[in-house]
Image 1 (tube, rainbow, N blue to C red):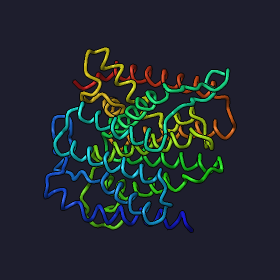
Image 2: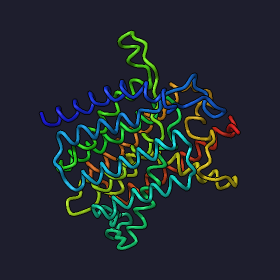
Image 3: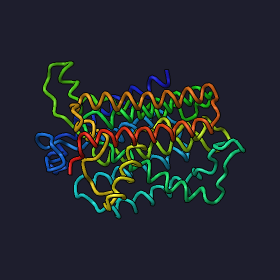
Length: 350
């Protein structure tokens, strides 16, 4: 009953936030305009992330215990959404965004002592402990995951589907471990994302035969999602009561990570900035190969679900962490080979 109440509250508040902020976003110019890179029609309100955050905030304050972890998470999330909204509106420099992410990461690391100090038994010789280097590793991990989810947001439904897949997988891991102290967090996040996804894909219009305006997640939303993912993964894999192994975290956010890492490598080889926007993401490559946006969404979402299933199965059957790591690296190599093959047939957009 408690879980039902928290998720229903998140769903309702997300709907109300979308309803309220759509006209506000249009009035203040918080919209995504068509451009050379963005081929959508019209000015689309960038309020998906704001609506999800406000729903999470409301459900958390109403139902969850007032702990230090919750307070720090909500403060860090509010800052992340604020920076993202400024970026949506004014297109901030990369340096400004990164500095903001470092400041927010410091809240997690020093505010609640949540940093990655143990990578698990990755090589079969015992746990890999990082000691003080764990703080540096955590800063890098936070920035990587935030930007991985931010960078993959490119076609309708993609960031919403990947977010729900990741949060649901984390919830399942908490249930499997019996460590349910943080279970409400991913469930609230997943449920709060559903209204956004329905508006983004036009599902309300199809279900109720009523015209509704599309909305986008915006950088405010994608960076908030990335922050929430790495926060939950750190809480679940570190500390005294570990819920799942660190290597499993790679599998449940595999597609955003692989997409980002592959892009960084390609851009570096081509002498480009890894943060400069272009059209060489996985969904662009699939569309260049002949798929439409809906088909690309299905392919990528299915691949993400499969990766998460492998991670969950590995955790459930206690597959050796070294084998799970090798499997992930093999999948990443296969991913790059597949992308390279597709791009030879259908060159990337310039």
